[in-house]
Image (cartoon, rainbow, N blue to C red; front, side):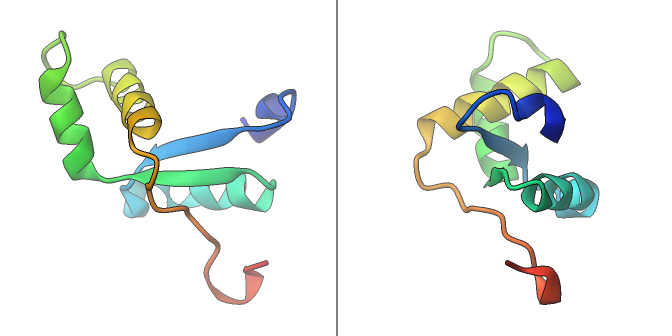
Length: 86
């Protein structure tokens, strides 16, 4: 994914803040030099409720994360922790 995103000069990844699930992806993206913001589960729940489709699925979640990231300018930026932090 990081290599694919490298074709654009400025990329921002938005990931639902489930660090126990997304920690490795987040770390890989950060080590590849990408910026990553964390979308809280509370913001995701609100976006899902306002969506037209019912239920939970990966495409619905991806769209909700993107919409929240575009709407909320002050989402927390992810960063590497520990000695590998740059």
